[in-house]
Image (cartoon, rainbow, N blue to C red; front, side):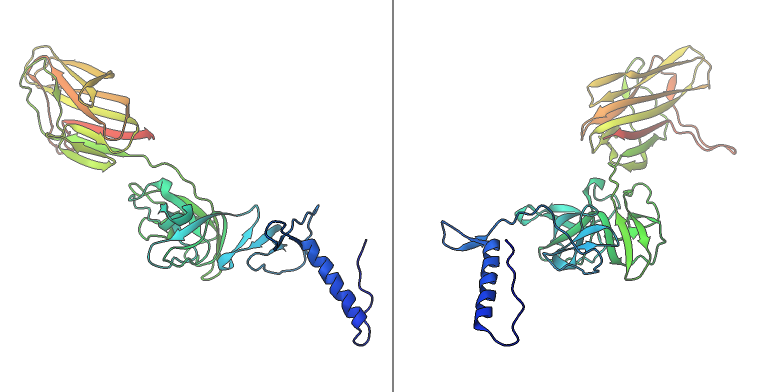
Length: 370
């Protein structure tokens, strides 16, 4: 049955007003039903087979309402802070700001803890290696006040109304290693984090637009170390741990111990050890040298053993190894060596007019898997 008001009378009519009020009451009762237990009116379930939206209207929905976005072909949902979420095209994380200052729309943020009601706390992300790559979260899609205010971070989708004037359309933007919360279109280099975050869709000072899709790759660690002085063996057929003296480059791998024989890793993973030792001969006897890796001072890594022989006095031989070792955080590896004649010793060779110096030993450590 369809309830319909007759045409309104030309002047006030009590019967018409009563009929109108009755229809309003009947309509209200379809939206609300009386709670049987508490004696108050509660929202009733409204069941429909489908819902239609005007597709020609450019209306921007207010908080708690929806409308059709004809330009992007999706449904818009009005949210707090004037945020408009495009259904199926954008994904937000609910976050809070506990940094002590307002963070602007378009700020690159990372995970920094958990706040009240299990909401993620975020802060400006700085890709200088001080924070793990896995802490990156996304880009704020509105200005977020401090003191625990909760808002939205875009983890996938559009962020609009930002300054992209320093870039060009199509640029890939990375988290900046020099300015917290900012972008750079220059790919960072080690030891900085390399975190692609977004692509530029529109260039502008106030109406710039980007598409956010952080590409999170776990950061790998490495180190390169040398020994630059000659070592005289105290005895033949005796194993010695080689003390390295120079850290050429290091990120997550360090020289420790006294003397510094230990290559210690700060993070677990599978590491590749590429090492070499240069030996010189001081007599013409036939003699041999060995080198190998040892883990945590107790476990010889048999697959890493290399052996070489030398007879000529004044000659050189170089032993090299390249092996994988699985390590836990805090584990260490040492480079061991031995000779069967003390006339064979690890030796540094000084520079010549045509070639640089050759270190006694060289070790490169590279993490290949987390």
